[in-house]
Image 1 (cartoon, rainbow, N blue to C red):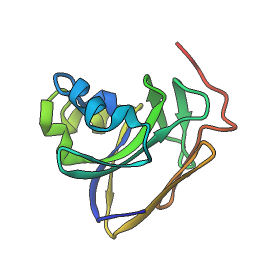
Image 2: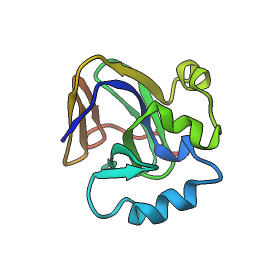
Image 3: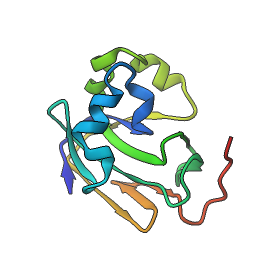
Length: 131
């Protein structure tokens, strides 16, 4: 799948919703149909990690906390839906990230390995720190 250029949140989607999280789950059939979703009209790509919740590291050394067994790439504009977490808070976080993709980019998930352009998050072979 190809997503349009722009600023994207990468991480567990539950971290950016509060009041509307149940709505997101219902609208996406609990993220069970595919990896491509429209959330509040925005194209998103979300998938299951291989080992569920924990902390995963990408090929650039950044970490991603996971509490729903999901990692996704969602337009940063979705941060405004609930105003649960600010853009600045995500930027300052070491468990979720904002990436500005300057060109349209390909996204894919293969057996627990997430590919978001040049970002690779391997949830298949990684040791997981569960809480």
